[in-house]
Length: 278
Image 1 (cartoon, rainbow, N blue to C red):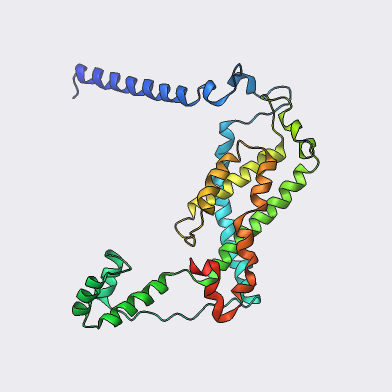
Image 2 (tube, rainbow, N blue to C red):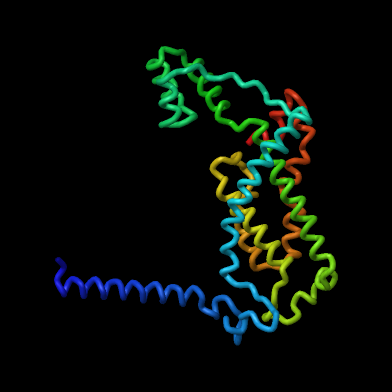
């Protein structure tokens, strides 16, 4: 049984922890950090039919991101894959590395690119020549590279979303006065309400970028920073105006990524395509 002194110490420790969390919460939502001078959170409460952006609006993006992952799965299975077959997207034949426990263990635990001294050591351990060891590692690395079909399906999904998002965004903004006169963007600043089309555009954009983040481990590894700037772009979409993201989606790198489609069907030269070198 705990003594009264121990119980009191636990109570004080929990109380201090609650105070610390409350202090951090207050600092995070400090009005001077988020809002202009002379503006408070109370000024941005919904009233008179006007709706303002709230942090709690972002909660919906997580389930929407999971929904995007489900939609993507069926899109790649029933749309992108048949489209690849229709466009004669073929995978280049890859020679598989023969089973070798010694080399496989080194590949998985020590690295995919052994140094010369390591090649010589592996040669003695496996009974293969140095050239055979190097060839084995080269073929083994090729086995781990994503297939051309996987690249095509991923590019198709991203291109489709960016295209639909761009068209939908233009459709809901073309009748807005600030589309033609940028000065109207600042009318009523800093107390500006949102409209349903803006809200859903931002939430869908952000949800899509969350889905990219969730699937980063299984997606094709990319050398360009599109994904790494995409996530912050999605987060900023909750703060920026609808017009700004139109320019982002209109210039998304995956549009050019899929527009390289002729290279997909170029037979033996497909590996020279930019995405194929990733």
